[in-house]
Length: 554
Image (tube, rainbow, N blue to C red; front, side, top):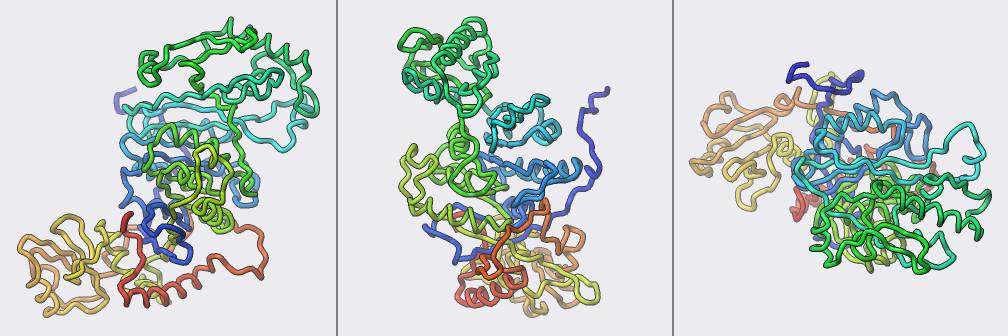
């Protein structure tokens, strides 16, 4: 094998990369909530197009990403139809992971939760996108089951009791903070609560071959002593399996405590391994956490405890956390309560039936579930709601590409700035300075025919070292090249071939939830949305209040 050859995963269609249209995001003030200066963002739309829309402003700014993508189970859920061929699933994930990696800070981390159906292929894909040296952990988390008894009755198979979370760094040199779990003081005679706070709440069954009792999960006195003796034997004979992947001197510096490897329960019977004092380093098996939440009726809602641990582990207050498969909104809810900034993307109706009302309660302080009491959350902050603008170009009745008539001049100017990699920021004095790519490079978009007189007036106002790109529907002959520091291009011809237009959905066949047809639409169908928004935003445009996303802190 030559030095240039590498091990990689191949699949049908891997070489086909989508040419994504960099859409603009438009705020809906009626759905924006709380503090108007917030940097928290909820986006309704296809998550691949949304990630592309965010890329220009957020490249290298996201500290933590958590995604829980559809698992490709082959069965249709209420909110997701996630059955698909492995090749389609891999293509879907590859396209999103490549953008997600670019969004991460140099010291950022991504967590991806998955089950056994695609975990092996996902691991190879992550090695390819992020690099093998950026792999940090394979974390095991428990899976909630509706009928645990039925799994033990089936003697021909093993119950699927866990999911996997892959953890990768953006940079191979990034180091994780040491993660500890506080060990609660034992409650004599209550062995279920004794193990609360450790990383082995149920593994005593798996490690020692103890069969859980039929029916309810109750311990007899004899069974409790059996578990105690088995765990004591495990600690004696298998100490090497306890995670010690940290410098003890560093622990002492962080906590001021001497390392203490062995500790006994108050009655002197059970030994367990700890780090400093009453803390134990977590292993990569997180069975102490409740994985499924109960705040909403979303069937795949993640528990806030899981996200709290992840966010606490790799971020600091003020860092950005992103979830592009938002589901019920747990990631944003926990990040909000913990003082982090967040971005969530969701296309399904549950963006409005689950996420939006949940985040409103978080802002109001009326959500006291999950980790609220643990982090002392009483409300505050807000979030901005954005929807995806329609495609900039569409075909007319003659099958020719034309500018979408749903775009008003402000939307068009913002869209052209994004297409040409300019930051949309209209100048208050010079109308032709609609966006910048550097201190002296500007862009101007107009729907009017560009005349020689118009071009001359603009040139007179420019500084000698200014550069300007003018995008227009039509112009006089010889406009491009008349001035060395002004480039003139026609719309739409300048855009054709650069990206895919008039495609709104790159999702996994996400379907709407069952609903009452008489209920008021949270977000109307696409034609109604645009028709309503254009009329509303035309009025706002006249007042200079067009709410187009142009970066945080706008």
